[in-house]
Length: 196
Image (cartoon, rainbow, N blue to C red; front, side, top):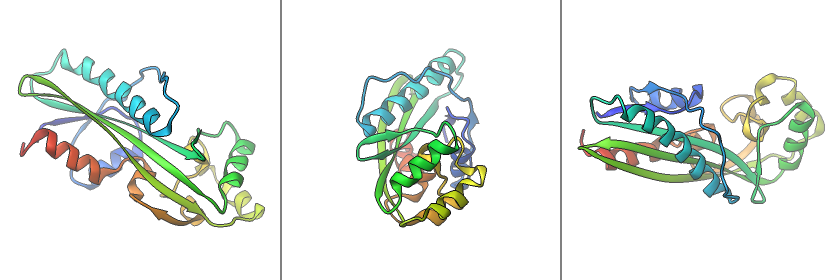
């Protein structure tokens, strides 16, 4: 397999890639997250491209073998408005209150930047998963927020943890909500790299 570099420090993405048998190097991107797009799908694609290209350009200088950089970005969107990470507990409460009993979308953009057979290759795509929360009481929201899990999470919840108790149903890839649609990533990587 061609050398794979993950341009993310996310422990969830590392875990998901490892679970499906990939070995990879982790080099988190610190590129400024500046985009001009506003549609959620285009935003995550643009951000994943920024991260992947940042590490690709740095790695290409010293590359002695073919390689692929994987950049990713995940956002939560409600009524086409992007919900970022909560600034504090009160903000997290407002987010969860607005999502309760309703559907929202989770988008992950992925960019694969590669140096294969002496040429640059690039593939950018996104995956969308629809999540519906139960009708939640104020007490249920407060109970969830009594744990620190919501901190630094898009939409103020982690579906792979206690946040799963908030979710009535999902339509799409569960792993996409966690942070990386690994089945789609595997297919795109296989198409890019062939049998290597």
